[in-house]
Structure formats: structure tokens, C-alpha cells
Length: 486
Image (cartoon, rainbow, N blue to C red; front, side):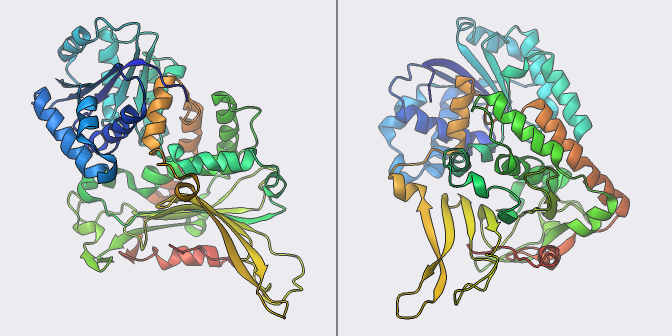
């Protein structure tokens, strides 16, 4: 990856949770591991009344908390801190941007990245104010954090407003799951090895499962989360993007638009849900009080910021079909939820059983599977049958386990490290194009419309479980079961 030597990276929402917990620690690592960072400048923008020293102290505390002790060094930190600036600015106030204009006056020939880590409702206003202040140059880029909109209509309004200021090649719609090492390796696994392509279709694959499970609840994000829910917060972006990479046709090259063309075809091939399908092929749930790792936790309705009687889902499971020749009649099961039994993100590809089992022990349909683990320990497992040592011809399932950290003996980049460097380098491969986003919302919106019309409350599930029992029934109807190994 080519890393530009000179850039200005301006974080709107620079005192927010994402900036302090993920973005700035990611930049600490890249600064530490890059030979020449003399041209780096990182400007945090926020409404909070802070001077630079107070902000540096806040970032220092965040890095101590979110960077493992083995990776944090005070000397390295001091060098990184020299790249940081802080500017108090209200994104809604046009007058405030002229101070930023003064700061950037001598850098119009440098790469300029505006990272909008704010509410999506501010995206259009901030972009308009940047343009009015003359801050948008041909070398400027804008990063839009999810969720981008609440529906197709709201996403369209935001995209049209941003498109008046930035061209499509300057807009980076970010989804951090696409920066994970295991997702990158899914591309390498599929398109760098000839042994998998003959198996990557309906003839060999029985079903596919994508699970994105969290043990945490909504925490301090209750007010935000209640407006979106699991379907908008996780499925519309993370889960669908993983499905696209998994199911897309091989692109002609890794050119960003070639890759995104193929992802778009998958989104357009997703079978729409009718209101009746929503009843029978989708399960939504809401966590109740329970226990996580032996510690009692409250139910969703008792969390801070949640209105009484809320029907927002914290869990959703879907049976999805891709209507094309490669995947016809292969069910894709998507599942995501909060307060689940384990923290886990993985893709499971279950292959069809052998047509005629002749070996003792080869009497199950769940023998051959490929598991791509996204978290907590990124890696790949291939499950096969092997002979048990001894005189008899007996076989049992075994797994070939490839862990990235163990194999390569190097620290893996955090997803935001890769994505931030891609933005600065101008590489759009791992970012959503506008037509992708539109296609995803076109598929998601009818589900919400059906829920609203049906008026059913989400099914309850105890915190610390794998969700509502109905989600098991969803897959059991096909004679299958979720893989629930931690």
C-alpha cells in the first residue's frame, strides 16, 4: 500500500467515541510504523471548549486505554502528538469555518481529508459550509460514517447534497467490517486459489451463514440506537457487504469499480421480501434482562435513553436468497444481535454431504464446512473428515485451522488503519458506491414497512443467549442449525 507523505486529515467529531476509541489509536499505529511522517497533520474539530493541550491529554488517555500496553510507548506517543491539532468549531456555524480556512491556507496542494464522524443529519450542512469557505480542493476527500441515512429517501437526500460539493470519486462511504483482515483474506481465498472456485456455487454449497454477534448492549448509544435498530445498524451495511463479497462473481481485476460492479449485481439479485415472507423468513427480537459472563445486565427497555414500550429490534435473523445462476436455491442465513452469548463474527459455508456415505462415521451432513472468523480471533477453518488411527476404517471430523496472527507472527492492522490509509491513497475498493447504497436501502425498506403494517412486537430473548428461539426454528425448518461454537 502506497502511503502519501503529506496530508491534512480533519476529523469532525474529534472528541467523539469513534475518534478517541478507534480512529486516533489507528493513526498512532500507522505513524509509529511509517518511516517518514513529517507531512502528516491531524486536526480534530469539535464544539467542545478545549485548548490543544487539554485535547492532547484526552487523546493520550484514550490511547492508553485502547492500545495494548505492549504496543504503547511514550516516546512514540510524543512524536505522534506533534501531528495533532485541535480546533473548536460548530459544524452548523458557517462563520467557524474561516478559522479552519486560515489553518489550511498554505496547504491547497496537499491531500485533504474531511472525516465526518458526526450524525448523518449534519453531513449536508458540513459539506455545504466547507464549500462556502473555499476548503474543497481537487485533492479533497470526504469520509461518511454509517449509518448513511435512515431509509432510501433520507440516504438519497444526503447523497445528493454531498454530490453537489464532492464528486463520486472523492466520497468514501466507510464500513469498517470491509477493512478486517479476514474479509481481505476472503477475497484472496476465493480469487487467488483455483481449488475453491469449482466449489463456490449451488452445486457444492448447501447453505451459508453470516453471524455478527455482540455481548454488549446499547450502552450510552440508546437514544441513537432506538431510532435505527439491528436491521439498519448492522444488516443494511455490514452483513450485506459481507454477503456481497462472498457471493459476487470474480471481477476482471481488483480495480475499485470492477469490484463494486460485481457487488452491486449481488445486491440487485437479492430476492425481495413480500409481507408474507417477512412473517416467515425474518425473526426480530429484543433482549431482556439476563447475565453476560455471570454478571447481571438489564433488558433493553431498562437501558438509558430507551422510551417506554419501544419495539426497536436488537436482534434480527433472515433467510435470504440470491436469484442468480450461481446461488439459486442456496439459503443465506444472516443473524446479528446484541447481548448474545458470545462476541463473534464469522461466515460459515456448509458444503453438501457426499451423495453416498460408505465410511463409518461419515453419516452427517455437517462434515465439510469452511469457516471465516472475523472476530475475536481472525482466521480460517476448513472442516474435513480424517481416519481415526487404528485397525478399523473409522473417520471423524477434524479441522485445519489457520490463524493469521499465529501464522504470520506480525501484528494485524486494525480495520480503521487500512481504511484510513486507503482514503489518503485514494483507493475506493473497500468503500460503498452510491448505487450500492441505494440498492441496499431498496431491499431493506420494504422489511420495515411490513413490520410497521403488521404491528408485531419483537420476540424477547434473555441476555446471554443466542437470541429468540424462533431464530432456531427459522433454520430448523430447512433441516439445518446455526453453528454456535465460540
